[in-house]
Length: 296
Image (cartoon, rainbow, N blue to C red; front, side, top):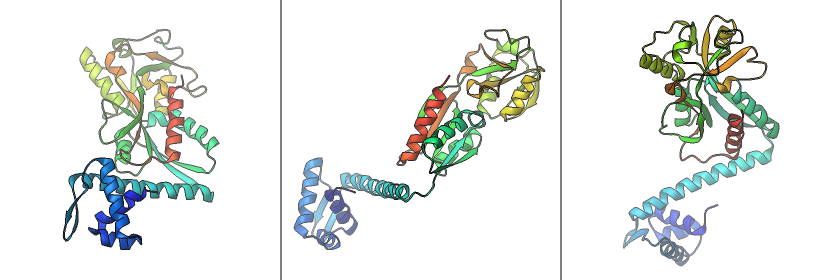
């Protein structure tokens, strides 16, 4: 799928010789030489140093060779994907997600995606955000949905949106009628919070320290359902993003904005591996996931 000029360029770079490249490609040496000259003319740089014993890449040639190899690898991946699609065999996407998004938004996106792509199987693994990010960095997952604080390194952020913390209480709780709640008001009640190291907990601890507050943490859990049931009992409150809200699942609960800047710093993000050709399936899923995250 590469242009002829790049195919011949790659062959000369591999063999170090126009003659050997011509033999490998079953064409004349003049055809190889002509294509290389045209390529150098179109790029405006010398790609080879000509020596009596062969052809040596210039620095520009090294860059073009790297591009050519990436293009070849991506072309092979694309052809494999096209053949796989034409074969009718079931295709698989490896998805990783943090608990907060996996509770509702990610399954909702998967359901919508699978309605349109009936030959696709989704492997969903729920992990803490740092581990989900590592799966993207090492290439063992196609797409990750996480909560993040600050800029991300070694990944491509396909989509990002605010994911502020909300105080979640039962409908009959004293805070339920508030349009917003201060951190001091929230800390008057027992709390269910994630373990230390989770982004939501990090922000809460920072905010509490800033305000000089000593909260009563009655329960520590990294799972949404126990935290919601704790709040539903009326005993106390928990902190969740608005992405956890779902008709039926969160009935009887009130989500109240917390009036503190630190608790608005978290973002929901969709991540992929940088410099990796994105499959059509992954691109379609990212589009669906983005739409679901943008829903009220």
